[in-house]
Image 1 (tube, one colour):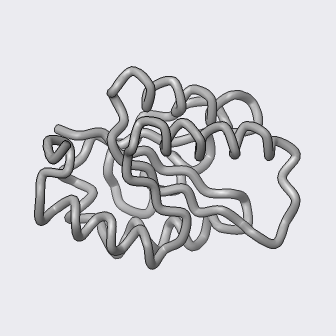
Image 2 (cartoon, helix red, strand yellow):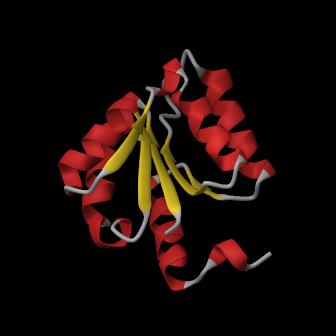
Length: 129
Protein backbone atom coordinates (compact mmCIF):
# COMPACT_ATOMS: atom_id res chain seq x y z
CA UNK A 1 0.00 0.00 0.00
CA UNK A 2 1.45 3.36 -1.05
CA UNK A 3 1.72 6.18 1.49
CA UNK A 4 0.10 9.57 0.88
CA UNK A 5 0.92 12.59 3.06
CA UNK A 6 -1.67 15.29 3.81
CA UNK A 7 -0.67 18.82 4.80
CA UNK A 8 -2.65 22.06 4.83
CA UNK A 9 -1.85 25.56 5.94
CA UNK A 10 -4.28 26.88 8.55
CA UNK A 11 -6.51 28.79 6.11
CA UNK A 12 -6.69 25.70 3.89
CA UNK A 13 -7.68 23.16 6.56
CA UNK A 14 -11.43 23.46 5.82
CA UNK A 15 -10.67 22.87 2.14
CA UNK A 16 -8.58 19.81 3.07
CA UNK A 17 -11.50 18.38 5.08
CA UNK A 18 -13.82 18.97 2.13
CA UNK A 19 -11.36 17.47 -0.36
CA UNK A 20 -10.68 14.42 1.80
CA UNK A 21 -14.41 13.81 2.29
CA UNK A 22 -14.93 13.98 -1.46
CA UNK A 23 -12.12 11.44 -2.02
CA UNK A 24 -12.72 9.17 0.98
CA UNK A 25 -13.03 6.04 -1.19
CA UNK A 26 -9.78 6.74 -3.06
CA UNK A 27 -7.95 7.68 0.14
CA UNK A 28 -8.93 4.36 1.71
CA UNK A 29 -6.49 2.67 -0.71
CA UNK A 30 -3.50 4.51 0.78
CA UNK A 31 -1.63 4.49 4.06
CA UNK A 32 -2.29 8.06 5.21
CA UNK A 33 0.02 10.33 7.18
CA UNK A 34 -0.25 14.02 7.92
CA UNK A 35 1.08 16.91 9.89
CA UNK A 36 -0.37 17.79 13.29
CA UNK A 37 -3.85 19.21 13.09
CA UNK A 38 -4.35 18.31 9.41
CA UNK A 39 -4.24 14.59 10.25
CA UNK A 40 -6.96 15.04 12.89
CA UNK A 41 -9.14 17.09 10.52
CA UNK A 42 -8.92 14.41 7.82
CA UNK A 43 -9.68 11.64 10.33
CA UNK A 44 -12.75 13.53 11.54
CA UNK A 45 -13.93 14.28 8.00
CA UNK A 46 -13.45 10.75 6.64
CA UNK A 47 -13.27 8.28 9.51
CA UNK A 48 -10.00 7.02 8.00
CA UNK A 49 -6.88 6.51 10.14
CA UNK A 50 -4.18 9.12 9.52
CA UNK A 51 -0.82 8.74 11.25
CA UNK A 52 0.02 12.12 12.77
CA UNK A 53 3.45 13.71 12.61
CA UNK A 54 4.41 16.95 14.32
CA UNK A 55 2.74 20.20 13.25
CA UNK A 56 4.44 21.66 10.16
CA UNK A 57 6.18 24.57 11.95
CA UNK A 58 7.38 22.22 14.70
CA UNK A 59 9.15 19.84 12.30
CA UNK A 60 6.30 17.94 10.64
CA UNK A 61 7.22 19.19 7.16
CA UNK A 62 10.76 17.94 7.76
CA UNK A 63 9.49 14.56 9.00
CA UNK A 64 7.49 14.15 5.82
CA UNK A 65 10.51 15.22 3.76
CA UNK A 66 12.66 12.57 5.41
CA UNK A 67 10.08 9.90 4.56
CA UNK A 68 10.02 11.09 0.96
CA UNK A 69 13.81 10.67 0.92
CA UNK A 70 13.68 7.17 2.41
CA UNK A 71 11.05 6.09 -0.16
CA UNK A 72 8.17 5.66 2.28
CA UNK A 73 5.97 8.54 1.06
CA UNK A 74 5.04 8.44 -2.64
CA UNK A 75 2.33 11.12 -2.84
CA UNK A 76 1.73 14.45 -1.10
CA UNK A 77 -1.31 16.72 -1.00
CA UNK A 78 -0.07 20.00 0.46
CA UNK A 79 -2.76 22.68 0.29
CA UNK A 80 -0.72 25.86 0.46
CA UNK A 81 -2.15 29.27 1.35
CA UNK A 82 -0.51 31.53 -1.25
CA UNK A 83 -1.86 34.73 0.30
CA UNK A 84 -0.50 34.41 3.83
CA UNK A 85 3.12 34.59 4.97
CA UNK A 86 4.24 31.38 6.66
CA UNK A 87 6.80 31.66 9.47
CA UNK A 88 8.19 28.25 8.49
CA UNK A 89 8.47 29.10 4.78
CA UNK A 90 12.03 27.66 4.54
CA UNK A 91 10.65 24.29 5.69
CA UNK A 92 7.87 24.48 3.09
CA UNK A 93 10.39 25.23 0.35
CA UNK A 94 12.62 22.39 1.54
CA UNK A 95 9.69 19.97 1.37
CA UNK A 96 8.79 21.09 -2.15
CA UNK A 97 12.44 20.74 -3.16
CA UNK A 98 12.81 17.21 -1.74
CA UNK A 99 9.60 16.16 -3.51
CA UNK A 100 11.10 17.41 -6.78
CA UNK A 101 14.47 15.74 -6.14
CA UNK A 102 12.79 12.37 -5.58
CA UNK A 103 10.25 12.94 -8.37
CA UNK A 104 7.18 12.19 -6.28
CA UNK A 105 3.69 13.44 -7.05
CA UNK A 106 2.86 16.55 -5.01
CA UNK A 107 -0.32 18.62 -5.35
CA UNK A 108 -0.57 22.10 -3.87
CA UNK A 109 -4.16 22.90 -4.89
CA UNK A 110 -7.41 20.95 -4.65
CA UNK A 111 -7.66 20.75 -8.47
CA UNK A 112 -4.18 19.27 -8.85
CA UNK A 113 -4.92 16.92 -5.94
CA UNK A 114 -8.05 15.75 -7.81
CA UNK A 115 -5.93 14.96 -10.86
CA UNK A 116 -3.19 13.29 -8.83
CA UNK A 117 -5.54 11.00 -6.92
CA UNK A 118 -7.34 10.05 -10.14
CA UNK A 119 -4.04 9.27 -11.85
CA UNK A 120 -2.79 7.30 -8.85
CA UNK A 121 -5.91 5.15 -8.88
CA UNK A 122 -5.70 4.52 -12.64
CA UNK A 123 -2.02 3.59 -12.85
CA UNK A 124 0.94 2.48 -10.83
CA UNK A 125 3.15 5.58 -11.01
CA UNK A 126 5.65 4.16 -8.56
CA UNK A 127 7.10 1.75 -11.16
CA UNK A 128 7.09 3.90 -14.31
CA UNK A 129 10.70 5.10 -14.15
